[in-house]
Image (cartoon, rainbow, N blue to C red; front, side):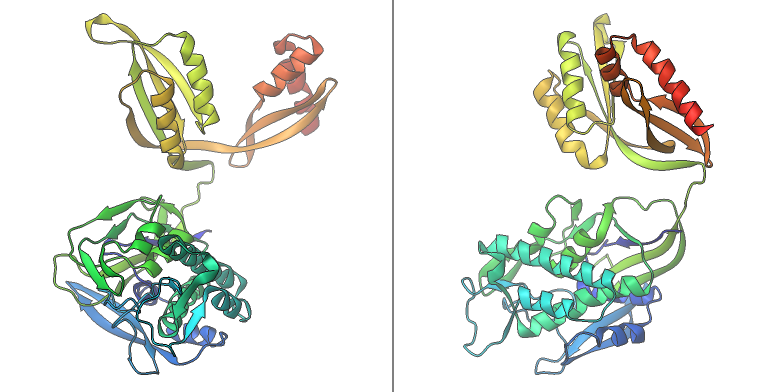
Length: 428
């Protein structure tokens, strides 16, 4: 059984909101504190309290620093306050640093990675925490136009971010989470004042981290998703979109700062078991369709080849009659959700269409596997379909049949027949 965590950042996300949501969903915070002691890091404590955000009871988790300044998150090193409970230590290079005091301590990204590596934390938590920090560092480096080796974190903010990021990754291990899923990430609007001037929201590093991921911007006048929150979700989630078929075991709400507004400032997480199909599998794919009545039929074969080269799972053409009884072709393309841009671009560049219809559809597929058999003319792959573990069909790969038939000078139907005979002998 695959156990998942499904995050719903309807009011954004930050590191402390992530910890709060997981704690509210059942994470034992004392076990988390015990695990984090394996890091060579001190000068902080983790506090938990039950609060209300709007109509909901939530758990608020804060990283409290022992040094002056108390609870983290009052002011970032860039000089502005986040709307969430704590600073996510916007990294900066020494080259772009402004108004830093001469004696101010910093941690380099390399030293943070070394700190994580030298701990006795579970391998999964170490791997994920390093990936999140590396992604955060890469985003900051791109924003500031420096090499990643030059990215440094102010000491106070670094402790905060380390606890948030390593703590979140460790929490997923303690909860035995196999996969993370996420709904589209909500970001705010407005501006924040910092040492580098007035900056629009989402903050530059947050915007960089969210490139390529689904987001929703709302008129909040506040920062909703912070760099640490964006780094955690975009690094750890294996898929963004609706919740997959699951059986929910628990739910948690992690609180951010108290804020007036229609939407509670909280992050929701569902802990659940994936519903495993015994006989069939389900997945969601993209269906792109367009009607074409002004393109030579000779070009359609080339267009189909290009679509397959760019990731299409299947392409098919249907003859249709359009208005004024004009004959036309309806072109339908099935593809992975993450190949939408490439497939749409191919349609626009290789055909005469002016628009494309898109639909996300769920399909049911049999279990599949491939085995290779040896024939007198060379190897041929056989696609095998199973239902409930039982074989229900087998089909030789067309490209292999074509290659063998051409090389041997045989009709393709004869190669097909003999390939199936050899397959059945090998498995019966």
